[in-house]
Image 1 (cartoon, helix red, strand yellow):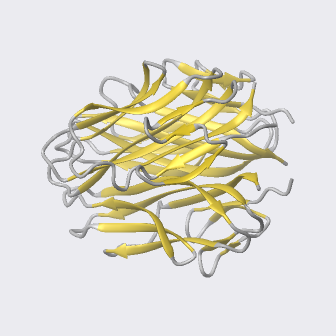
Image 2 (cartoon, chains in turn purple, green, blue):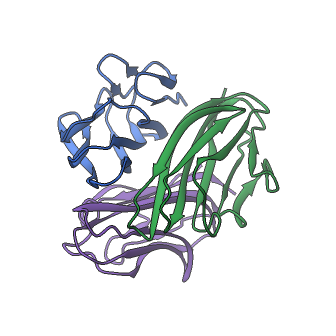
Length: 117
Length: 117
Length: 117
């Protein structure tokens, strides 16, 4: 079984087995059909905006997460999901609303093949 | 190895391999003994209540998560756990405290067999 | 494939296959080289401090999570990551900043081998 996965610390990839994570585009492209587990924690540094982060499969938003507290220095928008992914599907995060001051620091995005189909 | 799993977006099931997730009751029933990974993110839309969400195994609460901010439009009560599950055990979420205005929108509940025993 | 994993509820270990989790030190020691998935949810009970929790690999902080809301009774600092772990590496949580009044109640720390290398 060819297992492939990746995790990132933005700007710093911790694990990228199989090289299916495209660093420049921050897009995971599935090497094969299967069930994948994806999770993310996007950290918002203090500002007065609400952020919404979408996990996108190709160009379709699958799940969303929110962080909107205005009095907190750091808050995470987190979610996770199991997805049926076709070969060559692209999975990535999209900041749907708000801005991330200071970038994606402390944020993580992880995915791995649970089993192939 | 018979692997089985499910994930849901409430009202919308994303993955349900093996059909071990009962949509009507929102209960996952284990097809075999093993170690399972479960995680959930329950999103509370703005209201002044604190919510407590329990992950239940049969009728026993295993872990809890909380969301209690009163000034935030959307906030998630999240947690995750590895569980030893017997065949036919039922695993589900229970809203122990508070109400979810607008229902389980944006909430996820994911589980998969890490390995059989 | 020798799969090994553990999850804990602090003071209460739910799953500890292979006994690679040292209860006294709360340290997971990897039985073999591979890619592991780790996630944690550390619950802060109401107090006016901000907490920062680091996931440590040996003595190096890999990822951080924060909880800093001052008006909330219970709030979680959560994150998760995939890590390449060498045999005998130690992985554990460290409270980098703040205190946990009432201890690690409701907190979880989960890890499992995604695949060996």
